[in-house]
Length: 247
Length: 256
Image (cartoon, helix red, strand yellow):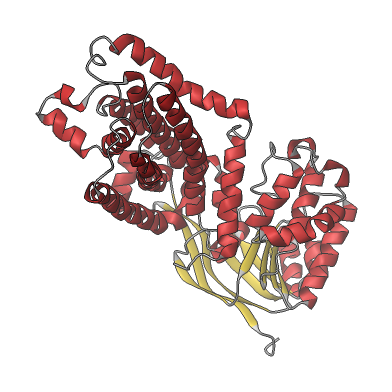
């Protein structure tokens, strides 16, 4: 492992969310500006002292029960949330696949959504124009190009989104339950893509409730429980401990 | 803060286009509907105020139309900009890109309406007997000044809104008040020289409306200093609003 290029180093990462009761109002916001800070009794500790690394060509799994902090971890790494403690060292651009098709607009056509979602996935219009037919063919939506997105099923939308997102070639890929939508054939094609990504030396971090998927793809795995790091290491050992706890 | 690249600008463009299409204004009737709103207000104000407030004002219908055009644009766009992070909650909380693009796309998508509405207003002005002059060359610059105004107000509001949702209600009360403290249907001299006149002078929307009326109705070119005195503070405030937005950006996903 040590000879591989380091892409992501997380050290002592922690995140607290302030406890909130009801709607935020101007008066409350002013009071918070003057008094409140992250941490302390008025906060929920979503993540506590998490440390691990991901190297190029490696896929690391993140497992844990609901509310364990898996999505929070990915959003912290992506820069969507600000860490309360610890350090995130990123070497290269990253792409976050958190819910396929986020940003797609049901009232726009499939064609319009390809350009919009492509832009969200950091693909330039000129590039999308060049691969447009391939995107549609991979998604198997040739008959729906001019149809509004809302006429597509959830599975078809996920297929379209993945068909676009897979062209993002950022060296770090964060996957948040990205393969939950879609049928068996779709999942298999996604998996083929991830194998290809590993071959291209991409560093991948994948949260999943499917232990079978993590077992098959991830060399190392991180187990989170209520925001705390229970284990990080070889997948078989971590999953074995996780299964013991879960049962 | 990193510099924007071609990919970022492409995203801004796509977000702007999609917001414009979503407003249902890519079709002719969709746009017509948005223009009918100020036109309807024009009819009401003209019927009620032309005998008194409008009696001394030359080309009163066009005077009203220009005021309503900029006020409506200001009110609609700042409201849209304020709410955009929440309206596109998934984009705010699940995607990785500079969130100021959401505010900018709201401002830019409305700018398309502003330009088209201005062209229609000018056509109405000429049809009603106002002669076109070289002063009209100032119109694009005045529209830019309006966009700077709308952008800095939108950035401040969008930055605060996730933390204080009642700002929405407060701002709408202020917008209603703004309609009356901006000389839309009356001449600035109507309010006399006291506190009300001072408020008019400090009201940036009143300034930009006055500039547009001066070039369209008065045929007067603007003094560069007048224009600069409006735009430079606007750009400073835009910088401050943007800085506040970027400072609070890492917290948006927690609050929207």
